[in-house]
Image (cartoon, rainbow, N blue to C red; front, side):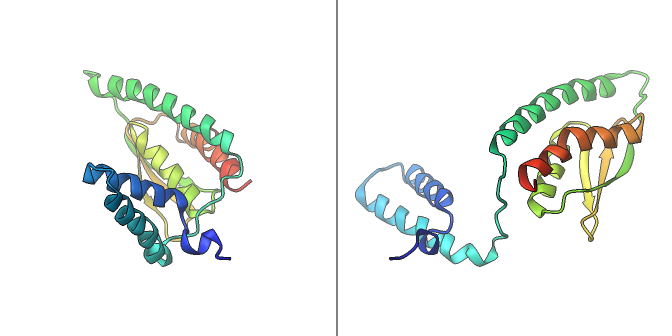
Length: 165
């Protein structure tokens, strides 16, 4: 018997491709199902050599909690960034901060960098080639060590638990 992983390496991607195909064709005719199904199987098979190994989520419920934490932090950061931008005295204290990483998996580092960039007032600017330091631009930073602790406690440690345990 053929194992599903051999001919369907990413089942969720295949389902998504089929759905997108049917939506683009604006039809649910049998021919569109067959062609969409064929493409949904062939495209992941052809592109599989280019994919990095997919991370295993060790604690999915922590991922849900992380999502809501980031969502709340985005709202709060929007208000803080608005306050800095609208301040008539212009007291912003921008800085580049080198953040030492404990994460080792590429996907987890990407999640951290994306989270930092999604939060208004901060942008992930560069990941060092050794993968141990992330350069972050901050719109307004008072205490750099406090900011590093905040990132570590709110984002990096939960990501480490979710992906690397």
